[in-house]
Amino acid sequence: MKILTLVRQVPDAEARVKVSGDRVDLDGTTLVIDGMDEYGVEEALRLREGDTGVEEIVALAVGPKKVEDALRTALAMGVDRAIHVETDERFDAVALSKIVAQVAGSEGSDLILLGGQEADWDSQALGAASAERLGWPQLTWTNELKVEGETLTGRHDVDDGNEGFKVNLPAVITAQQGLNEPRYPTLPNIMKAKKKELRKDDLGSFVVQPGVKYLGAEIQTRARLNKMIDGKDPQAAAEQLLDLLRNEAKVLA
Amino acid sequence: MILVVAEYAGGKLGKSTLEMMTAARECGREGPITLLVLGQDVAAVATEAAAVADQVLVGDLPALAQYNPEVWAAAVTQIAKEGEASTVLIGGSRSGREYAPRVAVKLDAPYLEDAIKLTASGDALQAQRYTYLARVTETVEASGPVIVATVKPGSFAPAAPAAAAGEQFDIELELPASRTEITGKSVEKTSRVALSEAEVIVTGGRGVGSPENFAQFVEGLADNIGAGVGATRAVVDAGWRPYAEQVGQTGKTVQPKAYIALGVSGAVQHLSGMGKSKNIIAINKDAEAPIFKVADYGIVGDVNQIVPALIAASKK
Image (cartoon, rainbow over all chains, first blue to last red; front, top):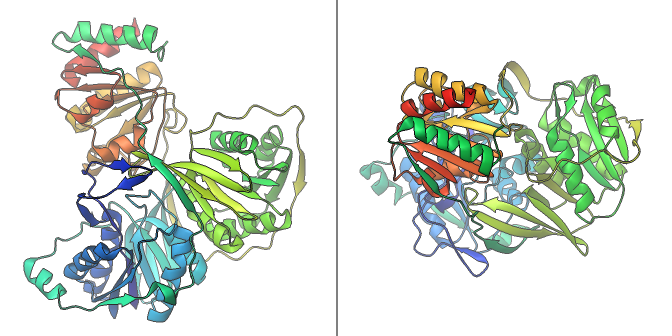
């Protein structure tokens, strides 16, 4: 089995987000591998360690030059080699899935692992769109995964609960919290990762056009009342809060 | 035509469907509004749907007894093509957001995801959506003969019934067989109001102290005021509460009239799931907790002392 993991680079969740003009400004922001994708990378490594016949694990990233750092992190975690399609253009998930499908085809991948939701663009679409282009089934929000031969079993979250599943390879799996606890790259592995292959694929070798135009971004903050009540006297504080909720906010009867 | 795919649960049309109907009526795209109901034994849902739509297409088939993204995508694509839909609106639920991209690929259409606002601009459709853990509001635009969009729950007012009930039509569908076998399902059950429908939500964080305190204070207060119950990721990870109650990036997104956070610190991942609530009320021992920055009303104090007083006082 050959696994393709998709890796994105996003601002650290604790980093402050700022907008300059009509764009989110990432200058000076700490960028990290998307935590949801990290679950996917970790799961690929665990499947191999579980002796399930994983021949190779490749990481793919599409984005600007600095995305190399995220790929190096994946390599340091244990991925065998990486492919970087370098571009400063922003592609929506449906457009991006063309690149994913083409790479999965040329690499002979049987399983694609990626995060269930992007921490920057909040999209959940890339796994499904890639699966559709490849004609593969998909399981999203997976929190348990096992491989036996050509069969994947596991559990994933659905609208009204959690479901066990069984599906044959090839397939797309999107990862989430609970699937595993990603490892930290060790120093020797970080050194080793520097020697691993990080191939550059030219964007021109893919026929891809963005389908969505980005017109603007703004930070809308809702003005909050910030009325603070002293909690030293619990009884009085509780009564004051109830009064405000009933008569000022009018949210309680 | 504007094709809206109905969402329903327990044999009843979901609030999200009525919200999508408002989005369809107000977005400025041309054509009759058609609601598509997919499933098995959905006659009651179809009748409810007819009250709000120009026409209702009903795919009531054994092959649709179980939701599957590939099957749903095939059905919606077929109807969108046959009806020459200009716009396809799908719910921004977990399932909606997993089959909508497939529909977009099948139709070779652009996809606007999780829209909070939809406005036609000439032939194009503009959407607003949240990005960066709901801290940024982005405006995006797509154009083409057909556009697929998912609509974020809670972003539009539910549509009122139309003047006259729409006509219902049974449809025939050519569906692929599902390749995924479902081997067991655990359905989240709660006797309380669902988080997505609740007007008031009481959420507990680690500051509540223990699972016993959670039951006593968070559930106690919620039951006293008829609210839904939410939990933070920390509390779910600790095994105190089921995942179904988790609010935040990897849980549910909610926008109630009042969100009462007990012992919740307010990490960005949590704020991304509840930061759009109309009123935020926070009770926390730590005056520096980030939750207070977004709170309308805050009490700095011990949840274990203040909540019993709140429960007692709200009984009066």
